[in-house]
Image: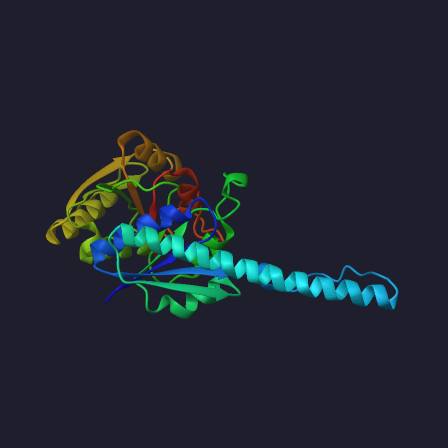
Length: 283
């Protein structure tokens, strides 16, 4: 049975991650593994604050710090279990099962890699626990996961809404072609309205590629139309999403039209930041 990996933390995005994981799990007939990772910051020993105290006072302080570290680790673990219990309850209420809970310690990326080969999709929130303090930035964990993931990544928006209209960014690049192939073969896109969009100047070669891509989707019994819109992808696609009610954006992680960034891809990064809908990324 296919598996979905849902990454949850204490952020306001975690509930949405669960709903998005449930949505794609039901369309793929997949089970969901939910994972919460206790970072090194939450499990590491505290700093030595004793300074140049005399031996007796220093020993007493170190003992207190040690006990404080133990309590902090226990509290972090209890919080992790609570987050997983809440996430499992949301998924079960959404009609998903079985659900497996995983509490890990250490680095998130290492934890994901341990299970990635078993997973069909990874679901993660756009931002983490500091979401309200960094609205103009992507979560650092999101950037790391997308950069290294070998499977598609669904970036959950702040709130889940039913998904019927899909906007797929297309530029003829390798990752865009991979997205078309996956959309044609995946039950995720059955019965959804798909619009393939190229952002830029009208070109005969691009029009031909768009029509070919739409033809492959149509042959796979997917409902697909094509459009070419003027402007840079970051602004043109975001405008379409906001003005025409698209509920999911599909993109390749890198396009060939723009210089790639060290994070994901310049256009991809900008779109995730700007869009208020979930983004499904294909490598």
